[in-house]
Image (cartoon, rainbow, N blue to C red):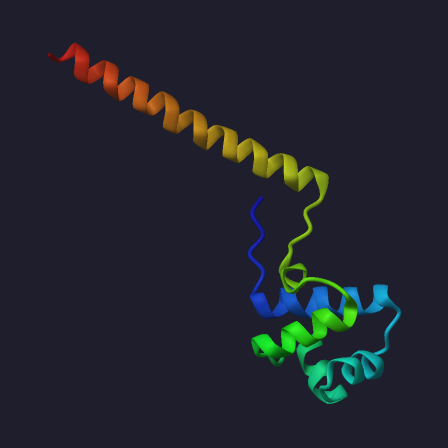
Length: 108
């Protein structure tokens, strides 16, 4: 089951989760990143989307990579469902090509 999460919401959730894991208050993270607490709060509730330099400052302050702010965590069940879909699509592509080639050869 593919998740469709708006990027602002994904960033908001991950930023808040990483901040909490680091044991930072909004005030502490904002101070370390050189932004206002109000701006950080707006990012964490998905009302604002920061520029790349702010993303870098936030990630640096939490000692993580910027891309980690955009990762989607899937449950094991969701991982299996995604894998199942990928396998089915690969099989359709592979066998579809074989069937098409066989039919083309047979029609000659």
